[in-house]
Image (cartoon, rainbow, N blue to C red):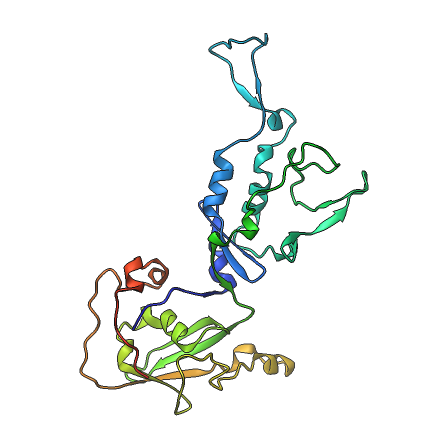
Length: 281
């Protein structure tokens, strides 16, 4: 089996990255890791500093403090950090409603009457509401930077039950509807490291590992249950795993071996290149 990096993410998987040191957001179907961008915004203050000395001269006293003009005007955070504070407030959430396509949503300002961008925490001095020569364009904005894209956001999640017919153990996973069976195997791998020796079947027939659940004829009947006022979890499709009895052993438990569910995303880079096992259909 060749390990593959996770391509699709569920809203629950994005929601756990909701801090300044681990900040993800979803935007227009893409999941973006803004942790490094956010730290850069908090680290640097681009505002013009004001000296605290009573007498302004070329030489400041030992007790001189440089004040940011934003704090002097009563703001709780630096003017250059307004967008960063907005992002942090929505960390782990979807921000697609901020944008129309690849650009910010615009509105007509009620006082000056100009068409301007709608920013949750207000405009900074570099991008004023009124037309001004102080306006500066954003260079390589985070919402257009492909370097911070870590994957895609699923349009819909669905539950799937995976039952090991040999041991009788059963696991219910929340998967993305766009994921193939092989990608679902990556999610199930922490629950069964000897997965190579099993054949996956649904209702007694084989399934194609390079197709999605829907393409394999495994329906998602939750909408039908909802229309009939029935619980959505009344029936969850069950994939059965049959042991092949191929006399193989578990793969070596090196750095690539997962001992818990969270380590699936934290494997070393070599695990995606050097592992040469081939999946059997």
